[in-house]
Image (tube, rainbow, N blue to C red):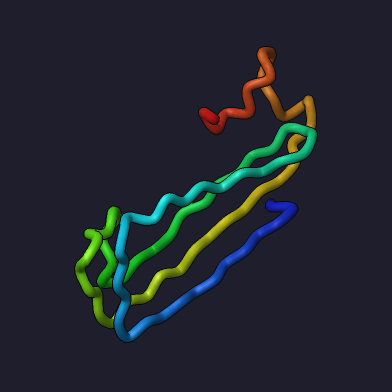
Length: 83
């Protein structure tokens, strides 16, 4: 179960990038957390090609995070996410 879960969908008839986007997801603050984020894309590769026009694009972005207690972490504090 997540403490925070976010989903957003965008659609575009045409989409053009002048340069490859630089994206990052950060979870600042204190406490250990288990987090995931990913996007599902239609007609949009990863990575995009600068200068190319993409048509009929849909992107659905998912983000979920939750705080985890010391009982949920391993002996070294590892939360099992590999992050």
